[in-house]
Image (cartoon, rainbow, N blue to C red; front, side):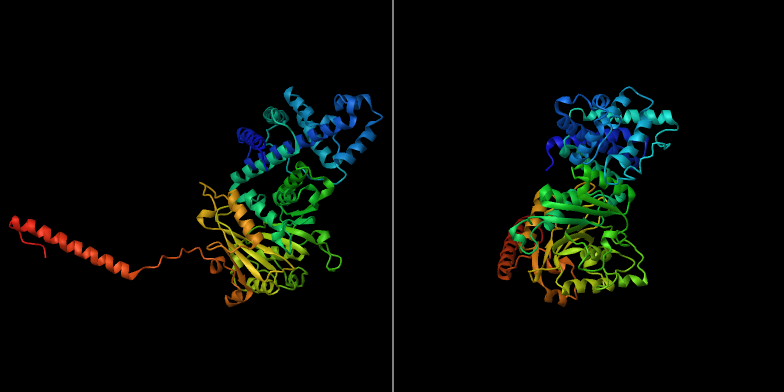
Length: 528
């Protein structure tokens, strides 16, 4: 839950971004702004932990390092055990801010060295390339060293001044980071689909996959050992699942992302939300090619599986399956998705790694529900194997990247219910219209999740459908076939209508006769 203070912090940071980004493209500025916010979080968190560790001996870390040179190695080992990383005093955010305040010519070089230090030396885990999109030698920052140093001095000073009145706790900076990602996504339009799922939609998926697999009405699972998002973007879906379960209710987070910029955003986002580097694993690679070594085990007895799988993959992406793709262990039981749309390839990839008592929820375009050919064959197999648990239709224009309406498909490998639940949440009363984008309100999200959890049947909103009915419709899952939004017309009482017409006719005759009397007095011909 984002508090007013945290939301205000996000707005302050966005205001800073809005004022400063005129010097470069919005996407470029996003990378700098979010990286600096991440750096501040790491530093503040580290200093707070150092104060607790050193107790009365603490003055500043710079001073302590100078006065205790023989103890620094032991201190850093202890800090790695407690906060999982170290930062040398010269690379702490407060030192960076001080260099900016005095307009030091060393700022740019210190930033360069600091980014490399955090990537290569701060963590035991490898965070190589975390700041690969940051190019401090770029002419976008200035034509020469001095101009670049001056611009970064301005940026860092402005950020530092804007943050003075706010606390630097995990939730505040983490939620501010999410807020900024959302704002940058709104401003980048079509590109936003690469890295951001609107929070309300993310919440629907995460609340559904955390429910008990066999009896959703009983509430949440006690624990999720592993959760996967194979198209994780900036990681908001994974963090939402973690938020639903609580830190102690989830084991390890796994994500995969093809876009290098977004991959780095995700890793920073995890750390900013207090997820230890040992508690998540984000892979930079292509899910369709299945290039992540931990997902390449073909033996069912040895393969890794996940209690929850969530995803918002690119819609109807063109891909290049080969003749051998039909033998891929992810697809060989179902068939290969057509080249023109990889939607079912993404779905089958995630579904393959779902545990027997897990739940998967994936966002896809409506076309997967009714398109024929190869997709019909895959859909039929999933239905006949009793793997599709629910189909949820959402309103159009909810995403930054597309205006089309989308659906959520919920899948399981071991269902108890013998019917498929359809929810049609696309009618006007189930969302709020905006000028550029539509929004789901808290109540709209609750209605969808509650209807799914308790498998409610509500007129013009939800219905449980037998497999036989779907067979009769040739495995077409078009939601309006099963949950129509059409308003039932009120029955017409013909006798009542007849009596009313007779009454009207009598009034017409009476009015005409009276009018003819006036015409007669005036010597004019009557109306017939």
